[in-house]
Image 1: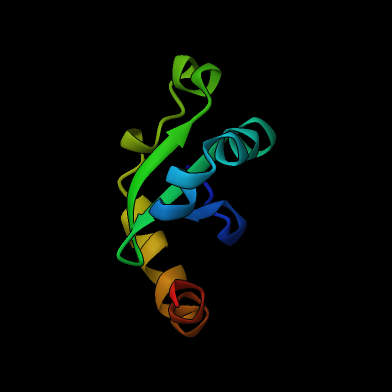
Image 2: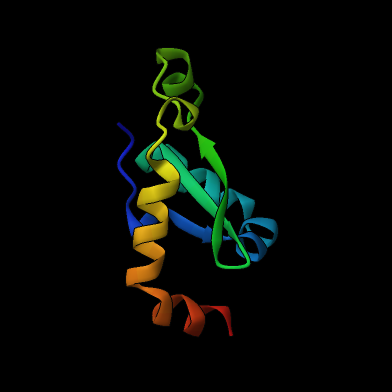
Amino acid sequence: MMNINIDNLVSISEANQNFSKVARLVDERGTAIILRNNAPRYVLIDYSLLRQGNTAADDMNVDNIASRVLTKHIKAFEELAK
């Protein structure tokens, strides 16, 4: 099961403006979840993890977990989106 860490969440505008930062995040943590309109939309995963079969697509709970994290921290995400 893929663990979702709130520190792995990146807005799509930040990913677009600073992809090298997102790539470093993936290098350090294995994945980054890119948000679009404050909702998880894309997963960037280290290729070595993909080859091992540990992909987000294999985990049907990713959407549920991400939704719970976003719901729990919605005020912070709304503030960051400003």
